[in-house]
Length: 313
Ligand SMILES: *[C@@H]1O[C@H](CO)[C@@H](O)[C@H](O)[C@H]1NC(C)=O
Image 1 (cartoon, protein in one colour):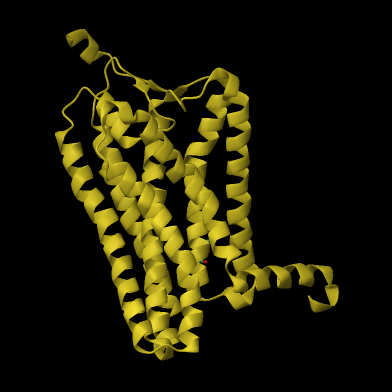
Image 2 (tube, helix red, strand yellow):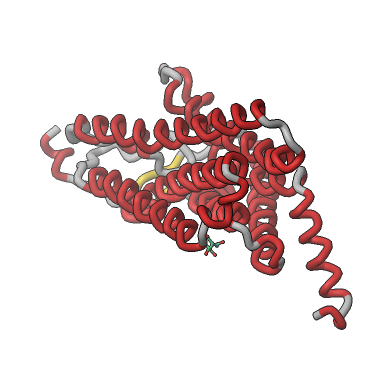
C-alpha cells in the first residue's frame, strides 16, 4: 500500500464504449457520421445567423452562442473517442485528462446558462412585448453571455483544481469513454469527501437554479398567454416549443444521469445516458431549431439566393 502511494500515475486508460469487436467498424462509422453532422449543423446555424441581418436579434444571438457551445462540447469528447475506436490505444496523459474534464464541465455549464438566457428572452418577448427592445438591449445580452462565461470558468476551474489535488495510485483504468469527474473520483486513493461535497453543492446550484429559472419563466409565459390570447403572442410562443424540447432533452438526460441511483450493474445505463448527453443532444439541437423555424428557413433561402444572384450583393 505504501509503495503504491509513492508511485503517481502519468496516464489513464479510457475503456471506451462497451462494443463487440465485430461491431467496431460499424460503430466507428456511426459516431463519425454523428460528429460530422454535429459540426456541420451547428456551423450552419452560426454562419446563417451571422450572415442574415434579420436574425440579429437577442434570441438568435443566444442560439448562435448555444450552437458554438454545442460544437465545442462535442469536440471535447468525440475526437478522442473516435481515435480510440480506430487505433485501439486507450491511453490518455494525466494533464490531457484533466483538461478534458475542465472543458467538458465548461461547455455543459455554458449550455445550461445559455438556455436560461433564451428562456428569459422569450419571457420578456411575451410578457412585455412593448418594452422588448428597451429591455433586451445589446448591452444586457452581452452582459448575460459574459456572466455565463465567468460563472462557468469559475465552476469548471474549481472542480479541476480540486481534482488536481488528489493522488492516483495503482488503478488507472477509467471505465468510460471520456475523463468523467465521478469516474476519476472513484479511482483516486486520496480522501474525496471535499470533492463530493463540492460536487453536490455546486451541482445543485448549477443545474437546479437554471432549471427553476427556466420553469419559472415558462410558468409566467403560459399564464400570460392564458390571460390574453392574441396573434402576436402566439407567434412569439411558436419558438418556445423548440426551446422547450431542447431544455427537456438537456435536463432530462442530465437529471437521469445524476439523480438515478447508481448500482454496480448500471454502468451500461450510465454509458448510454452519457452518449445521449454528449453526442446526441449537441447533434439534435440545430435540427430542433431549424426544422420548426420559419425564420431560419427564410434566412437559408435568402443566403443561398444572394450567392446565386450577384446583383443583390
Ligand atoms: C454571442 O452573443 C453575443 C451577445 O449577444 C454576441 O455579440 C456574439 O456575437 C455571440 N457569439 C456567437 C459566436 O454567436
